[in-house]
Image 1 (cartoon, helix red, strand yellow):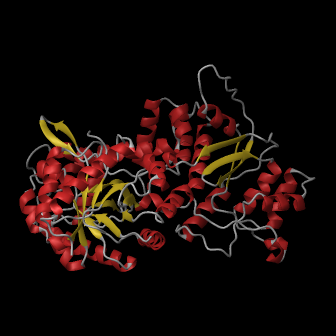
Image 2 (cartoon, helix red, strand yellow):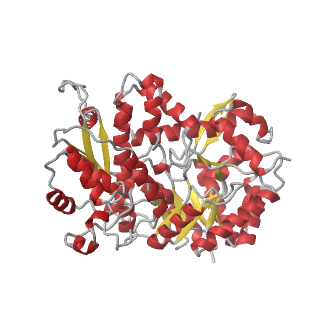
Image 3 (cartoon, chains in turn yellow, brown):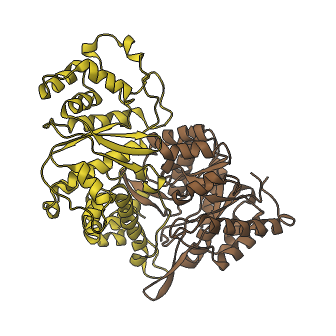
Length: 307
Length: 280
């Protein structure tokens, strides 16, 4: 008799694509078509998770052909099956996968569009937290070693491509619109959630380096040095005032009402911070927003249509 | 919850309908995993719970996994339960994860003493963490296992007596399983202890052909089929009336269509109420 673990490993192997595993699942032969029945689970695995990726990456799925997206998603799924029971957590490494996927080499900006969409998605689902009120910073001690708590819904992302424009153009794509000019132009984005919507805006490189270094857990003095290196005239006092006024900081003394585990959050933040590089001065002012409607979320479904 | 109460499963396309008319169903059931972050989703639930009873239906605890329960996930569920104060919490007689990889599905378990001991331990751990009894839903099966030594209804009954959990009887799943793997529906209803069954589910299924033979797929993508309504009437006759949920997950219709299904279920329950026992 097979142990439960052997049965479950066999079913899992079959679902993810190994046809030979059906014989190891210990299924009853009656009444008919054992492997075909097991394929119901495989079909659901690929279809439901491809739909989930398409919901998180609507613009990536628009940039590439629909059939290509399904192929890309299936290849990604096989190599990176979910490791978390929450569907909303699935797909964070899609950008990296795209970057290394040979067939995507012709679209060098695609991975960064995916990074932007993941940041929007994470921002939408981040825990609810109390923002830091202006004035609260006075009591925080030595500014050189000061680390500022950012809201977990605030994300920073930079790209050598005009990724904000690419994203917006494809989202709004319609017949007869102005053509998209693709040229390398560094972009520095701040992504955040306000009320029930998430959106992004371009910020100047010095502010970006200050904010992203702080958000990555750096000290104020290190973050200020980074900003100064980009812009020798960088005005730290002014920048800090804006930071507080923009409401991107969290009040660390107020407990988040959501239930994401703290250790998860720290890991995500650290990963974000490690990803950042400093770029050249960019034009600011381009903004994008998506409604935070629940329609965008990859909601779990119980079962899909027949294979 | 009133035994003739009929709720609907709240899914994303109907959120604005439901927020506008929170009294349009007796309760709303949501998949717990969709509400474990913050932002607009959590806000919807926080808002709705003030106007309507909420049932949390979990799809990610993977109680049937041969391995430890994901404690971090259980703690997330506990926080959600504390905030939302659902009148009932339910999970499935299924597994979705092995060796840390999730299949985003409710996979079947063989009905053996080994599975029973394991799932009973996981149900016990969950109930202890949540501080409340949970309900376990019967699966829509496509396969069965050569080594199963217990009938599904017997397995569920023993699970209830070992852990004090209840049963969420999905009438559509029972019908689908009876057609796909030959479960005896009549015997099933008479094996379950009526007092353990605390909620019923109704949904549509889809018929496909596999190698020339019909296979029913639990796709929740249509109205409840006539045969399932018949089984519902029989279920209520045998077990008594119970709070009942209409589920619809794919090819989503207008919210009114769900309400029409709910009204139909309510008529069935009201007709049976005089004759049948309510849950104790």
